[in-house]
Length: 332
Image 1 (cartoon, one colour):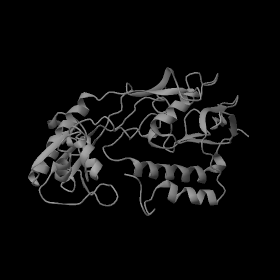
Image 2: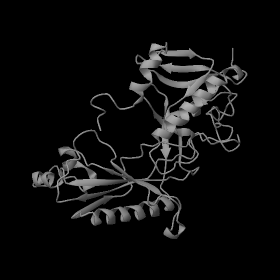
Image 3: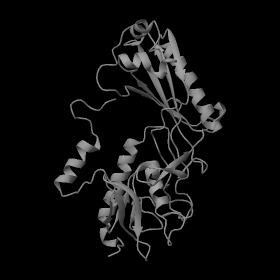
């Protein structure tokens, strides 16, 4: 999980940034944006940011695009209060920060007698199963989850991974545990669909700030009963599949605490400004020259990894923005 060793993975730093820089894009690193500025007409005019030395700058812009995903984007919109937007920028619906979805995650690991060195090479999903993805209300919940069969890591993973149960780094039988696990284990990672609830949300912390004194985001999130039933059902089916494949032992970890990487839904997309923050192309309903790209625009989370959808939706939105540039309302 340390990146692609030969630089062939299609990540944005390799695919998009070099071309953008070649065509004149200016990339400012170490810049912590704390506010999107607006004029008297309610149009975005740029961003105020703090550099690494603590100095404040204003970057003027005719058009602003936020792409800070499901936590950073609503935080910045809520920070950007003004007399035109007293409840936060683009927040006439009151939904900025609400409906946070993070994909409840469970893992079931199987230990096998035969050797398969899946820890060699880049980490990733080898097999995908959508067998229980569609809704079947007879199971006691709605929606479903994707399974991804993955390796369990190298020697450190065999020693310390929570997916094997309790950590064994201090165990007197550490070497035995590593020999039994390394190259003899496989893991079903279960990504369950999160439903959009207003109660799961990102707000501004009342007292905590970052190192520049900017209010920190506060995340309020709880798995609902539907998620709990869904994850437990899928984990039991995953355990059965590993045992059917010959696993001599299985371990499971439901609602893994150090997950929640998929931060979705906090500036949801929709046609009605009363029940959404942005339109289908990411333009905010309240500020016609302010756009949001990324996972925060998802109206629902689905039960799959969202990166490819984020990329596709962003490219679609960017193409629409360019093709309709002559209709864009600008502050200057």
